Length: 416
Ligand SMILES: O=C([O-])C(=O)C[C@H](O)[C@@H](O)C(=O)[O-]
Ligand SMILES: [Mg+2]
Figure (cartoon, rainbow, N blue to C red):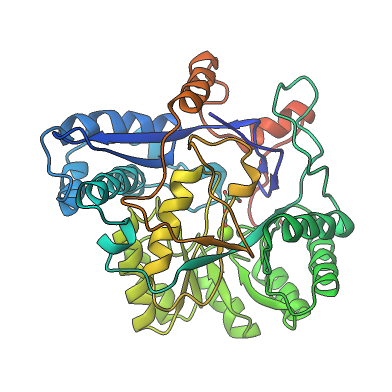
């Protein structure tokens, strides 16, 4: 479990620790490869039997991973009527769960294969077309600390609950990491307040690309209003409303580009969304899409339809950032900076953290992912998971708010 600051979203607030699953494959020759994905119980339940089936499998047989995953049963009660990560990434299905698990193993196999061949992962994916991948700062409304009585790592970011706080946070992101584009997680405060925050960012950072992402918290009418008010400063609006028909209406009525990591999360959802003009940029979460090669395939489909592609992230560690960076380096038409939670994570399982210079991560050229697992750090984070009584083993952003406000109920959507 990895320390996470009290970041606010429309469902609640991040708990002090978030579970991540670290996967390690070992070849017959003793070469190891690492991967990372979501670590809630439902992912672990699937990863264990899946790992059993992989014994004796070739690390180069990446297509075979999907066939094997289909043989692993998913507990239907885990996915029926469930929404993933507190409802922030659309409806959960057995297939999406399987793909998220496969992604960690695919990355681990690529890491091992690259080390065996002396090639970086990007070379196994066809070769990099850029030497550094650009990321945007991922701004969050944020409390100064977790609710009283909750033991957690201290962070030095302070609170951000109004436009001035958001601008200050952005300034520090720019100073520390050189980011030049900013994504604000919205859906937290009434839309007018979030419009003011984006306006304040536009004034403080003229010409910098800005995005606002309320995770589908607005009705079509609210989305249209916000889009019209911010059209002159937004690079894109991300998931203002839930679902393809609502997104299509907002796009049609405003002409403001819409991005998504909620209404297009599988290949099956592409046809309707693209035909209706519902989205102009698809943001791949490589875990959710089933790995790096599926992300490349998504990019090819987007290119075919003239739709943009980029990547978004969730709370994650350096293995996932390295994986994102390798695949992003191979996507020819990457015209929007990817977003990453990584700067919010004070902890990692790597011997050396990845760094952002000028808002970019240099594409590693060492064999495999180019990262090394720090087993001691991993053991510390694992010990925290073992010691947890179960309260934090599944991410639950509403539970974290209820500690401060017992009356809190998860808002029904659209919230505004
Ligand atoms: O772009 C997004 O929608 C996300 O990154 C979803 C995340 O779950 C984010 O909202 C969070 O972690 O609070
Ligand atoms: Mg989003």
